Each structure stands twice: as structure tokens, then as C-alpha cells.
Amino acid sequence: MLELKLDRVTKRFGTKIAVDAFDHVLSEGVYGLLGANGAGKTTLMRMLCSLLSPDGGEIRFQGERIGEMGARYRRILGYLPQEFGFYPEFTAERYLTYLARLKAVPPRLLPEKLDEIWELTGLADVRKQKLRSFSGGMLRRLGIGQAVLNDPDVLILDEPTSGLDPKERIRFRNIISSLGKDRIVLLSTHIVQDVEFIADEILLLKDGRLKASGTPAEVMQKARGHVWKCLVDEGWAGRLEERWPVSNLKTVGDQVCLRIVSAEKPVPDAAACEPNLEDAYLFFMQEAENGREKQGIAQNAPAGRRG
Amino acid sequence: MKEKKLREAFLRAGARLGPDPAGRNRAIAPLFRAAREKEIRYDPGWADLLRAQMSGIPAAVWAAQFCLLCALPLLEWALERYTDLEGWQVFPALSVCMAAAGLLTVQELAGHFSHRMAELEQSCYLNLSQLWLLRACCLSGTDVILVLALSGLRAKAHGFGMFAFAVYVLTPFFLSNLIFLSVFRNGRGRGRAWFGGAAFTGLSVCAQCVFPQIYDRIWLPVWTGILVLAAVCCGMQILSLCRRMEGEIVCWN
Image (cartoon, rainbow over all chains, first blue to last red; front, side, top):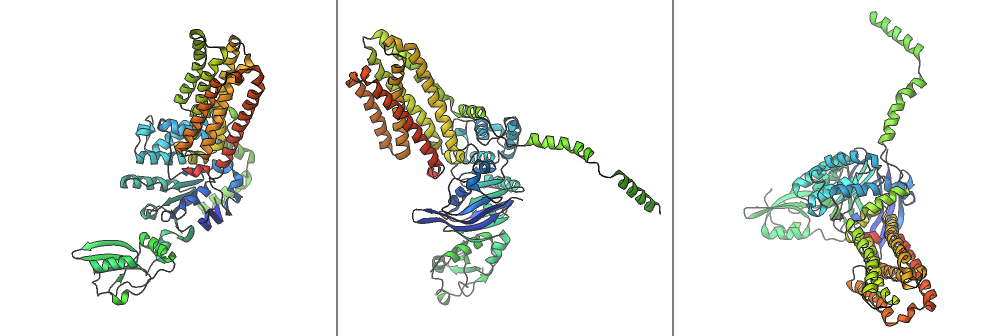
């Protein structure tokens, strides 16, 4: 049983608190770290990779501080940074061989390991090509290939699907899903659908704080009763959008069908509906907004049709 | 009835046979052996690490390094053969070559950052600071060995002695390394700082042409002192950068 424990982990950059007293215990499975840009996801991941040291709290793997484990921790770590770097002159094969050496993969096992990676990433045909000729999707696949090269117990993937087309994203999700069976996989993204189907647990991060966590079903459950659907005219749609988070907007004839996340009924004719993960995400993000004015519009709203 | 008898016979046989630890160990041994062979983690030795680093340095860098160092004896020979320059006058030209070799080394080390590989490499078993040290040793070590070889071959021709020849050529090499490492550390991303570093290095070479008396025997201890100081500062600069890498430097990306 693997255990990666974050105990009140805090990181500051000057006066800004990037990660604020983050508490959680990760075990085998896929974890989706969701948050807006600047929420502290990358900082948290860098601390988990021991690239940054926490200013407060500690991170323990199997009960041992990762900072003290040093190379022993890095040995069981796989990391795909948000900005995945590469040497453009290297071929894919040379790149993986180079990183395999840095990751202390035994040379006698390397050919077998590389075959596994080619199969996993589907890059066998281009392994002799220089990386400068690779597309964004191919590079991302190579990135995940290098991350699992040392068969890591802890796999950290920072926004692995950014910049990928839908087909590549689906392929990527399937790869990640297959990797989460016997290791800790932490995947950060601001694309909700990326984690909806593959994450065993979702962690919602806002301003460096963990706002909510649980299985996708649990997170969605918490937003139940806070998602509404209504049909209003265009003028009102704009006003409602300003007031509440709108997870979907669709024009139907001369009216607009809105999906609104709100603790209260936004318009009298709004109908409650089942939340999806995007709604839940908006719900928790909205909940975190302090001092936001939430009331006043319902009374003045026109009678709309149910959508 | 028959079933009951069979069951009793089976239990009797089982009780008689009992566990056989030796047999169990014999049966399991090949499985353990196979598992050990499949073990993906191992501890690389120094030779493995060096080999890995040498192979990680691009061929173009080795080629450029080799060309520069080949240019040294050729230049030195050509100047002596086809010009009326005095012995000391070849040193500024050699200094330029050595400063360029130093720049090449620093540029290769900085490549981890310019290709955005630093963050990824820092997360590996052999992390960026160890990798940096190894690479700096590989590249600078090669330069120093070749310069010493050249000194051994050509020193007598100039009447300086091998030690003095090596000092005169290695000093600009370590000084340029030091200047560019300092600029890399403090002026990363600032074109002016790099330009300033290059200009300063160039000027320091010109100074040797303007004041040829600095090659007098009397100044050799000063040269030696500067060389030792520059080499020590280079080492300290690299170690200090390595320590910063353990902190936040890799997140410059």
C-alpha cells in the first residue's frame, strides 16, 4: 500500500501564498487536481516532486520526509512538467535512452522497457525521428513515456493534456487511466472533462487551498440542488451571467437557455437539474468567493419558460 | 459414502506429507531469481554516470570543442611560421580560443535551461546539480588536458617552459568560464549582461596586447595566483549554482 501524505503544506513567494496549509493523503489511484490558472497546482506539484521545498508543513512518502529521502524518492518518481522540455536534436529513442540513464534504469532492461514505452505511446514508427519534427501531441505522448520509464510509484502529470486535440486527449486519458492501477497518479488540469472519467478522486484547489475533495460522484453530489436551468431573453441572460456562474449557454430562437450554478433559485421559473462535474467545479469555486453579492435579482427577474 | 472415504484418505495423506520447506524454497527460488532480474532499479557506478553524461553531450558540442582545441596548435604554429611575432604575441590569439572554449562549456551547461529540460532533469535520480557537476568536469577536464598536452609539445619552442605556457593559456579559459557563469547566475534572460560579459572578456584579452610586459617572468606568480583564484571561483560558482538548483532555480522555466 503506497501512501503520500501532505501535512499542512504551505509555500509562499514573497507575500503571496501559493499553497496554503494543504492537507491530504494520496494512495494508489488517479487523482485529479482541478483549479483555475494561478490556483497553486504547479507549485504543489513541484513540491511533490521535491523541486521546491515547502515553507511550512511536510510531505511524507511511506512515512518518510521526501526532502530527506532525496535520490531514493526521485528514483520512484515520474514527472511530466507543464512545460515539457526536450533537446530538439535528439531522436525520440536517444531522448528516452538519455533520461533512462538519469533515472538509473538498468541498461540490460532498457531495450525491453523502450519497447513497452513505444507500445504505450504509439511512437514506435517515429522513434528514429528528431524531436524538432514532432507535433505537440507526439511530444506529450513522449512526455508520458519518459515519466513512466522508471516504473514510478508516484507519477505527477502537470497539465498533460493542454494543447492537445480531442482525439489525442482521449488517447491520453486512456493511457493515464491504465497507469493508475498500482501507483499514485496525480494529474493537474483546468479541463474538467480530463479527470471526470479517469480520476478516482478529485481535489479542487482555489487560491492555494483545498476547497473540496472526493470521488467525482461525491463532488457532484455536493453540488446537488445548486444547479438550475432556465430560459430567458438575451437581456436577462447577460444580467444573470454577471451575477452567477453559468456553466452552459445556448441560444434557442430569440431566447437563451442557461445552466446556472447558484445556492438559490436564480429566476422563479428555473428548474433544478442534476449537476455534472463542471457545475460542481463552478459551485465550489463560487463558494470560495468571499463577499460576493448573490441576491437581489430573483425578485426582479421576469417569468421565464422552463428549459 | 465413497466420497467420504476419499476425503478421509486425502486428509490422511495430507497430514502425513506435511509442509516441505526445502522443497518450497527450491520451487520458489527460480521465481525470486526472475523477479530480481526484472528489478528496474539499480545503483549506477561512477563509470556508468560518466558514460551517460558523455553520451548526453551533443556531438556538435564535442565537434566544436575539438575544432577550437585543434585550432590552438595550428594557430600557434602558423603565427610562428608565417609572422615575425615574438613568442608572447601568440598568447592573445590563444587566449581568444580558450575563452571561446570556456564559453562553449558554459553554453552547454546553460542548455538545460534554454531547452526547458532543467525541471525534468532535476526530478530524476541523477538530478540536475549532479549532472551539471559531471558535465562541467567532462567538458572543462577535456579542455584542460588538451591544453596541458599542447603546453608540453610547444612550450619549449617559445622559451617559456611548460608551466608558464599552461598558466598563460589556462588563465583566460578559467576567467571566461567565471565571467559567463556569473552572468548566467545573475543576468539570466538579460541580453545586455551577456553582451557585457563577452565585452569584458574581449577587453581582458586586448589588455594583454597593450601591455606585453605582463608576460615577463616576474609576473608569472601573479598569473598563477589569478589562475588559481579563477579556478577556485569557478568551482565555487558551480557548487553555489548546484545548491540553488536544489531550491528554486530550476523553476525559472
